[in-house]
Image (cartoon, rainbow, N blue to C red; front, top):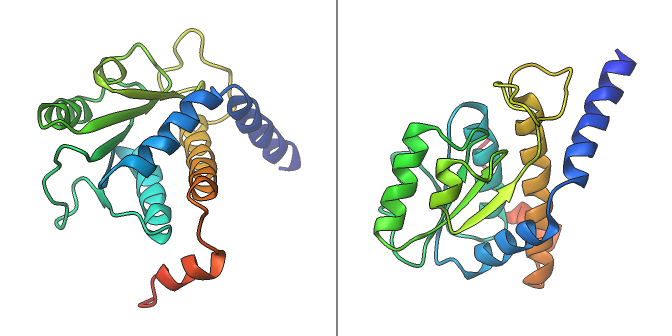
Amino acid sequence: MKQTIQTVSDEISHVLKQVNVNEAEALSNQLIQAKRIFIAGEGRSGLMGKAFAMRLMHADFQVFVLGETITPSIEAEDLLVVISGSGSTQSLKHFTEKAKEVGAVVAAITTNPSSTIAELSDRVLAVPAATKKRLPGEPSTIQPLGNQFDQSVHLLLDAVIIHTLDQKNGLTNNEMVERHANLE
């Protein structure tokens, strides 16, 4: 078990070391500039998106998750963050096209910077991790399906939030705790 834990940790560390810092900073800047932020993803990528949305809410951003009943219409000056390992999920492609039609900015987080969704997006944050498809050029992994991508995205987006808060002369942990759910 200890070796498995170490291998998973090493794999994620290897992926994160290869992330283009300029792409991550561009996403951070886009978060600061956005009027409102919308998050989209399917499956486990969607769950990583919900975790990202929660931290953005704690950091006092106005944020919505696509598919929730309280999500309003996206508009110009809004940001849509699309999380898709393959960059080709049809529902997410549709959301990307719709957001672009109304003048919103789209940021894709994907393993494939030449994917359909990435090509439609204004910003791309490439995460060089393995996906469930195990395409040529993806790193090897002991993990099943898209675990390596999802875990890397989770940690990377947490780092983006920390950096973004630093850029905004961020909130303290105590201020963020005040925004944490109290009906639990």
